Length: 78
Image 1 (cartoon, one colour):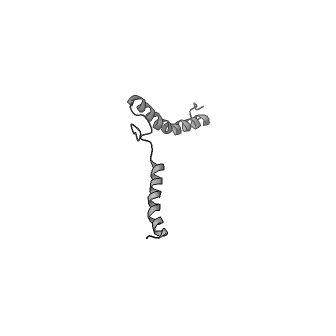
Image 2 (cartoon, helix red, strand yellow):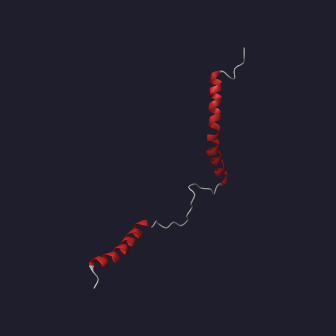
Image 3 (cartoon, rainbow, N blue to C red):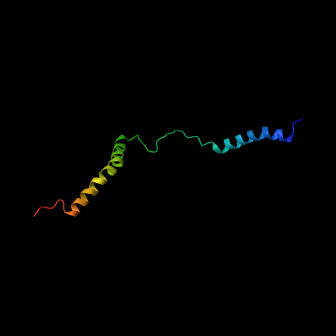
């Protein structure tokens, strides 16, 4: 006859595994896509990528040009 302690050590891990499996399974999707955006329309994707990477690239040049313009660097010398 097994003691109560021995039985609980055998039963508890199995019960924990069953409980974890119940909460950790995700619903089954028909199509899984690992990307967070739609890439089926190539033309739209191209413009979005250009805007996403292009705008932050251009902003420092626009800001520095504005500061130069504000300081009078582009005005005619008198």
